[in-house]
Image (tube, rainbow, N blue to C red; front, top):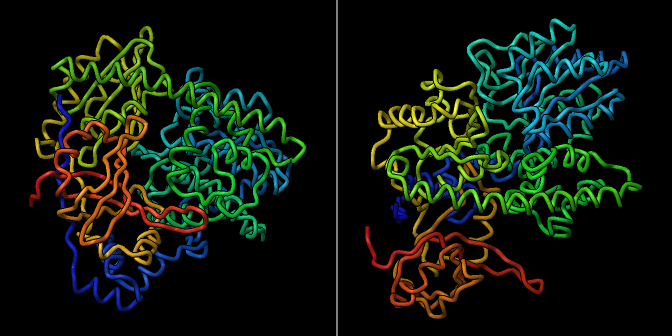
Length: 575
C-alpha cells in the first residue's frame, strides 16, 4: 500500500468578521483569522480564549451527582473511614488518582489507592477489585477515569455495603451503574456545559468542589498542573475547561516550584528549567508515565507523583529512572510490533485493501498495541485495530479517523466480542481468536456503509496563505498565544507559494531534513520532520516549491528567532 500524499485543504474564513476582530482586540489579522476559524468571532469570547484563567472554571456543583459525592466524601473524612481511589493504568487514570488522593490526604482522610495492572487485572472497575478493597477495610471507593460501565462492580459494592462514587468521562450505557453517585458530564441527564473533560478533568472538578467546601481554594493550582499532564496526554479537545487546565497547568509546570516527585519526573524528561509546552508533555513526560502501566506497574508513576517529602529524593530519583528505563523498553517493543503490523498491512490484501485495518499477532505486548494502532492510522489514514492473541483470547486496541465512529462500529459487532468500550476515536475490545477473521469482515461491512474513498484520503488543513514578508516576531508570538495545540485546537498550518530552497536539504539523523528557504528576499531556517525519503526529489526541484508549514519560536543565546516546521511540500504549484 503506497503512502498517499495529503490533499491540501484551505479553510474558509469570514474576512469581514476577521477584520472586525483584529480591530477590536488589536491583534494581527492572521491571528484574528485563526480565532474566527475556531469559532471565536465575538471579541469577549476570543479574549477569554487567549487569556484562560482558573476563574473561567465552571461551578463543579453543576455536575449531576456532585453534591451527593462531596457530602459522602467529607463524611468519610470526618468519621475516619478508609477511602480508596480506584484509577486506571494510563496517564489520565494515574494523574486522576494522584490529585484526588493528595486532596483527600490534605483534608485529613485515611486514603489508599488501587491502580489495576494491565496484564493481571484487565481494564476498568471490576468486582474483584471491590472485594479486595472491602477486605482491606475500605468503606468508600471512588473511581477515577473508569467505572461508567462497571455495573457488576457497582452491584458487588452494594452487596458488600461499600459506598461507590464513580467519576468518569467515557461514554455511559443507557443505564448508569447502581452507585451512590455517578459523576460524568456525558450523562444524558447532566446539564454541565463542558462535555469533553478528560478523566482527570472530572476528578479535578471533585477536587475543586472539596477545596471550595473546605475553604481551601488556594490548593487548586497545585492540582491543576498535574491535571494538565493527564488532560494533554488523553488527547481531549483543548477548548473550554480543558484549555484552561492545559494552559494554566503548563504555565505552572514551567514556573515551579514543584514537589520532589514531579521535580524528578521533569528532570529525567530533560525539562528542568525549560518552558514546558504540549509537545514536551505529549512526547517526553506522558510516555514515561504511561510506560509504567504499559510495561510493568502503574504504581511506579503514582508513587513518584505522590512523593512530597524531600527526604525521599534518592528514592524518588530511582523511581524516575525506572520510568525512563520502562519507556526505552516500550519503544523497543513498539518498533518491533509496528514493523510486523505494517508488513501484514502491505503484504496481505485481505487486510490492507480494506477500510479498517485489522491486524493480529501472537503475544504482541498489550501495553503498546494502542500506540501501534495510532501509528497505523497515521501511516495509512485508515481506522486500525491491533490484536494480541494470547491463548484463547485476543485483546484489541482500536484507533480511528475523525469521520468514523469506532465505538459505534464495535456496538454493531458486539455479538462477536466478549467485551468492548471506549470512545468514537479510541476503544478496546476482546474476542475469541477463532473469530478474528469474522470480526474483520463485520467491522469492515460497517465501515463500507459510511466510508468512501474520499474519506480515506489524508488531508492537510491550511489555515491561511502566509508569505515570508508577513512572518514577523509579533505574528509568531500572536500565533503562539493560541497554544497549547492539540485535538480541537490544531497547530496552525500556513502555505507559502513559489519558495526557493537556497541551502540544503540536508539529512538530519537520517530521518529529517534541514534547509534554508527564501521567498521575496526573506530567508528562514526550516526543518521537515520524518521527510528524509524526499531528499532527492526536493534536491531536483529547489528552484520553486510550495511549502506548508507551522511557526516555531526557538531561543538561542537569549534571543528568540522564528523557524519553520514543514508539514508538506508540493513540487508543482497547484490549486
